[in-house]
Every structure is written in structure tokens, then in C-alpha cells.
Amino acid sequence: MRERLVRTLGALVLGVALAPLAASAQDAAPAQGAAPAPPPPSPLGVQPVESGWMAAPDIKFGSIDHRTATFVGGYAGWVTDRTFLVGGGAYWLANGHDGTEMAYGGLVLEWMARTDRRIGFGARALIGGGEATMPISYAVRYGRDTPVVVPHDDIHFGGHHGDHGPGGPPPPLSNGRALRSDTFFITEPQANLLVNLTDWCRLNAGVGYRLVGAANDIDDRLRGASGTIAVQFGGGSN
Image 1 (cartoon, rainbow, N blue to C red):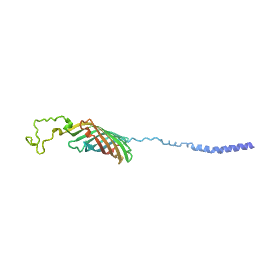
Image 2 (tube, rainbow, N blue to C red):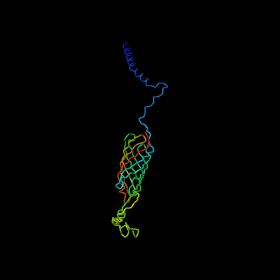
Image 3 (cartoon, helix red, strand yellow):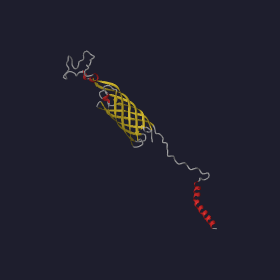
Image 4 (tube, rainbow, N blue to C red):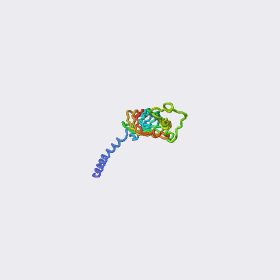
């Protein structure tokens, strides 16, 4: 009798202990015909690459031959992921003096950061060539010890019969000046500050240096620091 009572109590205790586990397993099993639960979201996402054409009118300020120089022009190209531009640009000297003229252009590469923020930064470089015309003295062009050959047998300055007026005789021809034109190679790196006005328009201001070579006698007069202000349109949107 005692053994039967012990077995009955043991079975009752075991049943009470296992009842919550059975109920939990039944709740976890999906109902017959119910749709399966959706899978958890993947931690990896695919973001579209924002690319497009961009154009930028540009004004450059600097100096040519120790005088203030203003260049007008611009550049355009394809922007990948709102970060890297590959294109081309061209510029012309707008305020030449004493016959000075200059124009250049070439490949433009630009890197831009934080284009999705109000303030960003970047760098740009132009690599190409151009042509310039500048006044140059006879002494520099031909050498100080080289006599200037006069193509005519008789040249008179001032009045007749050797009368040169109250100013005296004219200066020697070696002190004269002529215009010299030459082509050149140019590379113009610069650092930029970006002010993003809208998704498709930003202000680009920078400081750079104009490196000029392969222009005989005048390349050192074409080099110099420059500041630029450009307005960029396009290049992708948020």
C-alpha cells in the first residue's frame, strides 16, 4: 500500500513538472496552415551609386608678370559617387596689359569629400597646355651684347638732319620691347572648400599655384599663386 502511494505521488509530481515544458513546445510549433514568420532583416544593404554630369563656371584671380590677372572659364565632367570628377576645363586672361594674352586648358581631376554635408572640402588639378603672348625686351630676347640689326639704311628719329628735339637722341634699340608668343605646359593644383547650397548646386572656393614650363624666356613670368571661385551644378543628388 505504501509503495503504491509513493508511485502515485511520484507520477503526479513528474506530470506537474513536465506540464509547462509541453505547453511551451506546443506554443512554439506553428499552427497548421499558418504562414511562416518573415526572416529577420539582413544587416547588409545596397546603396545606389550617385553619379552624373557636372558643369562649373569658374573665375581665377592671381598675377601675371607682377600685375593683377583675372582668368575666366570653367570646367565640366563626369562625377562618380558624388566624389571624383574626370573632365576638362579652359581659361582665358580677361585683363591683359601691354599686349599680354594668355589661354590654357586641359584635363581636370577633382576629389570632393562631405558632399552630403553643408561644408565639405576637396582638391582639384588641371594638367594641360596653353599659349601666351607677352612684351619682352630686345636685350632679353637677343642678349645684351648682341647688336640689333636695323633693316633700313636710314632711320631718323625726331626732326631732320640729326635734330632730335629737346629730349635729346632716342634710346638705343637694345632697350626696345617686342611681343613674344610661345606655347607652354601647365599644371595647376589647388585645395578647395565646398559650401553645399542644394543637392545639385555648391560653391567651390580654392587656393592653388600655376606651374608653367617649356615657354622660353617667359615661363617664369607666367607662374604664380591663384585663388578661384566656382559654382558647381549637377554631379548627382541625394
